[in-house]
Length: 405
Image 1 (cartoon, rainbow, N blue to C red):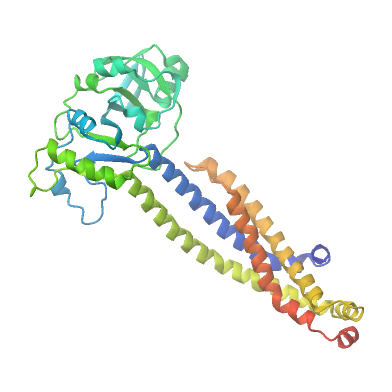
Image 2: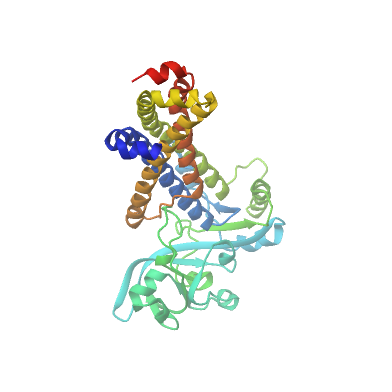
């Protein structure tokens, strides 16, 4: 009967379903975009190291009252503090030192500007997610001896050599120094975190070789320590242990304030989840207004349908149809109409997601849960919109209804 209603009264039904379609487009497009953005940011945060604490002179909290004058005078973490942390910590699974700068990288006549020169120690790839596309990662011997070897990013390798696989075994130059390429990082894509690791446009070299070129001990040269906890170790326990170890290393008295910061990556993930939960609620509220308008449109068409079928309803009741049968008939029709409108809206959102994904730095994905939510909303809206018209139909007197023209 719902399909027949669409065929007979195309314009009337289409206009009534327009509100449901627009409402589904609004709520699903907003949810899909927000969920995809959150997924991308959470993925970028996880790439910084799961269950990882960053030891730095700076606190990563930020805010309008950020006391930068307090942190700028602190000493930066040093390479020699790594061994002390490893030997004293019982909760840490891996620890590494990291420092970086930007340089121009050359190969024959080709050059790439503003390439990140990442120096790291042995445990760097245990904490970071580094997928090698060509060649291999740096070896323990290359780290310990400070060999001039490098793993290059995909974009750097492509710009210098045309193809990433051609980079293996070649020598490239930066800061008047030459390094041999032993591996190429698999293409990572852009990151939503401004201060994240951009492996596509970077060179990873051993710390000891980096230290032979640059002054790594200067407080202005940057650098921090990453410590990853063992599996199932709570980050708060790891922070507590690291605080005690760092105070011992720096020989701080019991009354002295910490001259370092312990930044928990897990907190960033929790903050992002909380923020996007609030945004989702706001988006759902705004989009819900369109659904309410659409619900009144469906209710209107159901009242008209009941009026047009009054004699049919009377005839059905006269030959034995129960109230529940009449009620269910109109509720199912109302719900089906809403599902049709929702399906049209979902199809339009899917087309929009394909177009937007090509232009945005992350893919917009409509998950199975989001699709289930869309159809559930349509079903609920259909039942609510049809309950009053269906009740009116179910309560009709068969004799009066049959005589109605």
